[in-house]
Image (cartoon, rainbow, N blue to C red; front, side, top):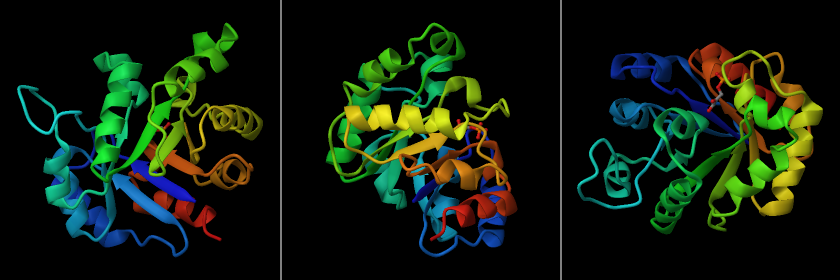
Length: 225
Ligand code: 13P
């Protein structure tokens, strides 16, 4: 099981150090945290396995605001998210750009969690499978690629997908690509065990509930063997 914390635009370096001092990952679970870029080094120094929240497809160049694979590797970062729905919806990132980011990072031995998921409107229009197929199609096939299924309507809303909805979407994604699939969207200590017990759910990508070491610890323990 892989349990990943996506801190989004939260936690300064000092706050990251406090988290690291209080958080103790349980044995038998692959636990990673994804801090903002400025807190990556503090999280690595705190002894955690650390992923970035995004990574560019070029090693260097005129790409204002981006971060590269060599920059991350120098800090001891082990992987990156790509294609989070907030990147897609708020910052105009595309399926093709997401795939290029994933491909370049994987080729340089970073692990990658590529995020996919439909909006509420797309689900209501019966387009969930078409959206997932479109998002998964350009992604590289690679042993270090993990998919995160994050239905946009469940992110930060407290509206978690039911275990049945998660299972159905994960099984569909697994019919498209041979990769572990994490569930993301309002995962909390009180719903984690049930979601993680679904056969096609291989872990979780946790936003809000990962900011507190106690609640993130409880979610990690729900994944422990
Ligand atoms: P929440 O857990 O806050 O709903 O966020 C999910 C998410 O976007 C993780 O990447």
